[in-house]
Length: 235
Image 1 (cartoon, rainbow, N blue to C red):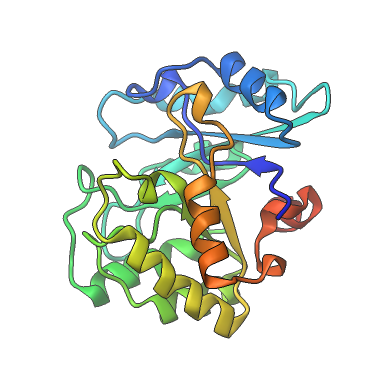
Image 2 (tube, rainbow, N blue to C red; image 1 turned 90 degrees about the vertical axis):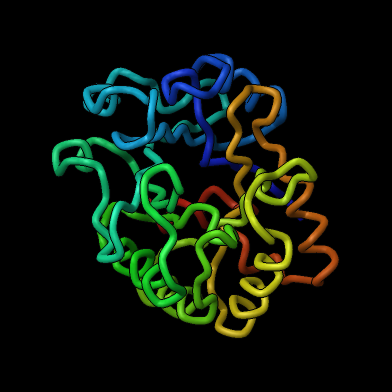
């Protein structure tokens, strides 16, 4: 399967990642990607950048050689109503948002509470991706997520970091397979992301590709095959 984009990545600005913006860009170029998205963590994540970081994205060239660049944010969902930790002003400055549940920012709830938190976050017009919904510490109803993502035109993420052998999320491989089953059933679009926190991990989607091959999942539902397919969600 063609895979030419990676839009969930972090630089040193997130506080617990290890490469600069330019190093991430150079890595994406070397690997032949056509689009790179940078998504620093938002306010409630310890050690991350101040919100003013997101205000000045206008200075960043959105194309370097053949590589398109988009500047987003990985935004913390902080309650079961889907409230997120980014101001209206900062939301207006980003190209797209990834909404995620992190245990350092919100206590895991019941399946109903976690599902409600994610679906309510989907309703925000800047949320285009749900980050690592595979995390079993936050049990969710995967069929409801697949249906809601299709309704709100949001991409569900297949997070390579979740399913790597040293990944720390709970039951991610098994949960990803359940998610894929419902997405195939309901024709819900997905995106593969590395969640890279260092330059050499940019574009690394190999563990997700193994699962997709194992399940014979249709590539037509994966937006990584085309920049234009992805742009339909964020532009």
